[in-house]
Amino acid sequence: METRVIIEMATVRLAVMRADEAALAELKENGRKQKEAIKNGNVEAFIKHDVEFHFSLARATGNKVLVQFLGAVAADKRANLAGDTNKANSSRFTRDVGRIK
Image 1 (cartoon, rainbow, N blue to C red):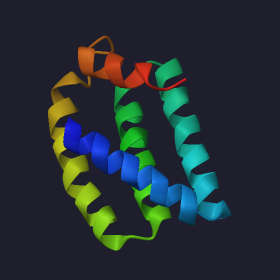
Image 2 (image 1 turned 90 degrees about the vertical axis):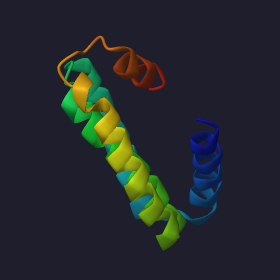
Image 3 (image 1 turned 30 degrees about the vertical axis):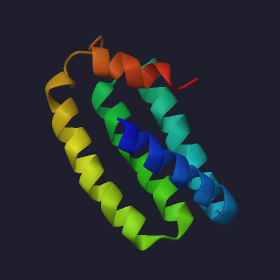
Image 4 (image 1 turned 90 degrees about the horizontal axis):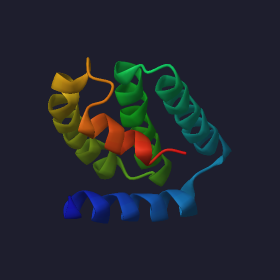
């Protein structure tokens, strides 16, 4: 978890410095789709848009290596959450959902 936090914090810092209007619009749209998935109780859609949000954030940095690294992290996250897709009240889903306002 520490590694994820460190990388996400650095990604956000770079994205804030480098993101253009198109990147910001993409991030906002992915966030909207996450909220919609939560509202509808659609765990699979939430996971899809959560992963895409993080890819959008990485792309906003302009750092191709970071985007490639995120691909490996996303694959691991999908594998970890795959067993929870039919459980809207699973602890992982609830924890991730709780971070989105």
